[in-house]
Length: 96
View 1 (tube, rainbow, N blue to C red):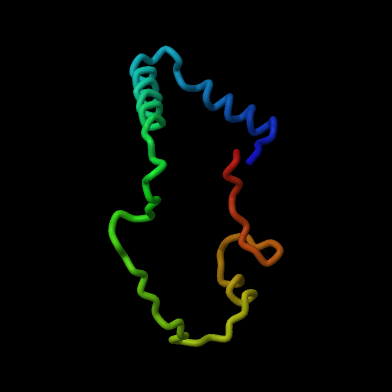
View 2: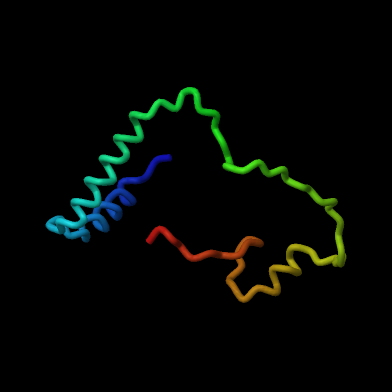
């Protein structure tokens, strides 16, 4: 993933709002970095990757339509109160 120069500038501006003279913040960041360094020293080469700590078997059900409708995508988009463009619901910009 890459970011543009403008996105980098926005991130830098937001980070500059953090008070640099806060001793508690400095202590927290130092502790986090120390712990990350400690974790990087652990040999996990023989550890089996896991998704969950418990044995779960996914029980799948039959996929059956209970109350069939004949609505099209366009019909469903007509029911939304949000702005629709190019047959899609328009979401607010989250990068600002």
